[in-house]
Image (cartoon, rainbow, N blue to C red; front, side):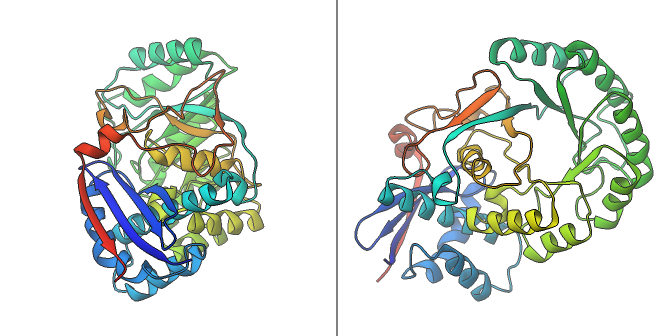
Length: 367
């Protein structure tokens, strides 16, 4: 069954993709957030010309064809655009077969443990601790991630002493029974990252994300080898050669592909299979409540080497105002620190008509 039409519905932050087959079957997907309007242009200019007319169910071949035809553009924007088509086609297949995507890729519907993921660095340690306590009491979260250092900070903190204050503050506020994770967002040199890592270990932190500039594998490897804590990374990586190198070289302990950044479910499954062979867990990046978290929920219900939990954004309207009112129903109810993948076909959601009416529309169609 051939892919006949690709439509995008876009604002600056979100681009939903609707794929239509020659028999009229449809599915919804999404490109990666942030500058999504630019990614939509890449989709229509560099993905649609090759994907249209191909078999809707041979997603691997379709994505490889786009990659090969656009081999001079190996970077993130092309993969982000590819992911919009990939995820729409998985939804289409699920709707046709009456199955959730997790079942199509070998899993079952059900519950997942989630960790509450904070993006904030402009929050004081005391305020972050109070926020976490409130979320624990309201939703039952028993795992939390917070930010340390400054984003790509070259060994500088967001403000002097913040990291050294927030780690013990959060641990004291939540107690020893709660799992704590941190994200350094590529802040540190290896020596500084290792020193910070020892402090994290002393406070029972279990997950140390992107301690060094993520593209400097040799720097991250030094940190991984020096610490007992799980060093994690990979959210930015979209090239399969990089993933192979990361896995073969044991650059990190836990791998974190982002379904939207890497180019969709089919390509993420390739990484998961490589990781499984190497005996490495996969805890994907899913840092907002657009469709990427739902994609990740289905993935984690299917892969045998899924990590301990799902990343779940806890940011309010002031941080990600664009992530609300996207769907006709809310797929992200949290109960007892768990979320649920339902047995509804495809991704199990529909896009809000009101949101679509306000979006910018483009279409590419098979002649």
